[in-house]
Length: 402
Ligand SMILES: Cc1cc2nc3c(=O)[nH]c(=O)nc-3n(C[C@H](O)[C@H](O)[C@H](O)COP(=O)(O)OP(=O)(O)OC[C@H]3O[C@@H](n4cnc5c(N)ncnc54)[C@H](O)[C@@H]3O)c2cc1C
Image (cartoon, rainbow, N blue to C red; front, side, top):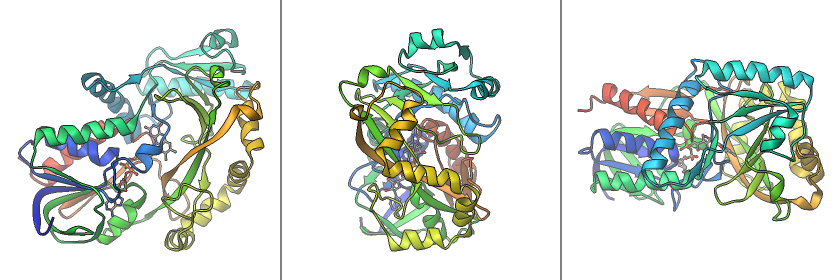
């Protein structure tokens, strides 16, 4: 790849980078694109380790980028899956209220969802929700018919295939880490690359890539690992589709839930614990650089101090199967210790401000000839095509694409 020249480079072969590349390539088939991915395969990090849920747009603040992109992106994703024979299932989900207080919160959630354009949301009595999930226990539930499941790795690989079909000169370079950036030049582990424009979609490393491009940052990415358990073959019959708790208003994107995956497994999780390595999937994984950077950032400490009780509970659950089970039993009381088996884990790229606030909305910034997707948390997989559209429009203006 020595001294190769491309119109646009996309750094990061997760679903966001690939969806952006696909949308640009579809609109401008003559442009030569290159996608640079440091791993040996696409969608190796957040995209390949998520819950596989097609989110409806229920929770997000009306008019936020998240709400708009989730609702629009969900429809685009389902259409894309249908057109390309990607297996998916719009099975719907229930949000389960365990007490009266949570039941009143369901009303607020319903209104929020309706403001985001969701139709046919329905508050169900126990008798009604037991028709959908017979083993769930609670005082009421919200039925969300738009939610579904899909394999985001499969979607990512399909984007890659279509990019190559649209322009055989475009390239997907694996095992290719971007090390440094200078005006119009990318230095990678596979050599130097001349590019007109670069779009950075580095997920857990979006802040470090932005710093290399001399973007002034007021946020930092901190990794939060999420561990999953899965139901044993005997216990799988206890969950049909998707069962979610009423979200904690402070952390609406968290909360252990039950998910049927496209491969037929039923997963329960993820929790959220601070991790000492951004791409560390084991409890003992450690990186000096990642730990130092996270722990020398005031936002991390403010988050810890402001939410120490929540964090402590998450930590205890990460090391105790019994406590994890207890949390799950709140929704399905008949679950037993032997019903849950330790499963995989993923790490969320959480963008924190210096005051410890979690940056909730998607964040995209322009820097000279480049664009940076700085924050693309959940539901970015659901919303990938809408984010792709948005970046394509920005590129059309900033990069003067024709
Ligand atoms: C546990 C978990 C559960 C989730 N559940 C859902 C869900 O059910 N539904 C949903 O919609 N969303 C969900 N999300 C969120 C969703 O997965 C992410 O928002 C989305 O995958 C982000 O995609 P990305 O492309 O930005 O990041 P990633 O998938 O992390 O991709 C970034 C890529 O950039 C590469 N990279 C980084 N630095 C460099 C470099 N210097 N050079 C070259 N390559 C580089 C990385 O190797 C990586 O492949 C979940 C996330 C997690 C972690």
